[in-house]
Length: 91
Image 1 (tube, one colour):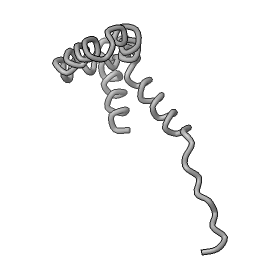
Image 2: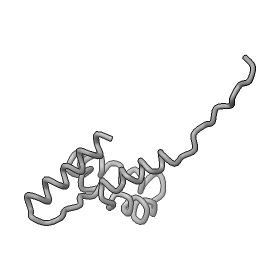
Image 3: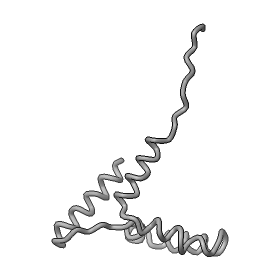
């Protein structure tokens, strides 16, 4: 939750500074914070897992605006069915 507000603040401050609406993607944040891990992850996925997995799937995920990604995660985690506790009539 803290990361969500951090990235929203990042985009708001950047938008105010540049004078236009800026939506920073997950990939941009990842590249700014740790470029080497992004390159390493790409090479591992393409070499050892499946080479076509990076381009259509992972690239489309990391091009989503960061705040939108976090909202999707929150909604999925909220909607996921929780384990219902059975009422016990007798101890």
